[in-house]
Image 1: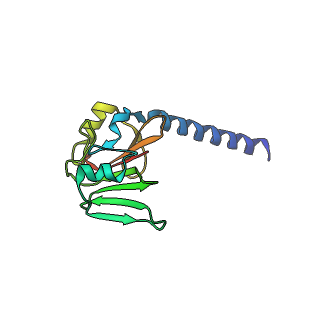
Image 2: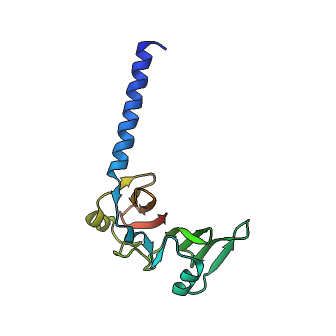
Image 3: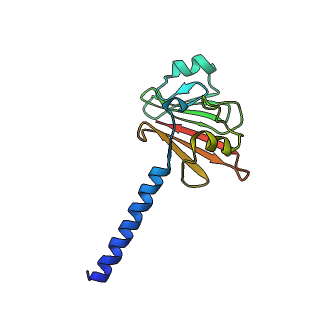
Length: 154
């Protein structure tokens, strides 16, 4: 490899490193308490969920015979791993949201006012995190900058 090629490789590597670091630094950290949807927290078991919402519309068992996910209506899904919630998605304005009131249908500017801008990921989604990135929240907006979907994962 000649010096010119090596120099270009170094410049590209440095550029990618700077972009990667700036994207991570721009992701807003949220309080751990915000990583709940409709009073359900990451790590809740099925009994807790059913105690709050009642029987689900759909209860799906995975290939290993363990609970895979619960659906409430067609817009609130709770994914399970080892018997506890590890991911939740709400995709309709049904009143389910975070403790501070982030929910589908509200303007994204409400989130910006409370928590900053987060990092932009694909398809208009922004990501926020807690606990050094161990918990993440993706908020996707529609073409009117209103929240279309919230996903929480831990």
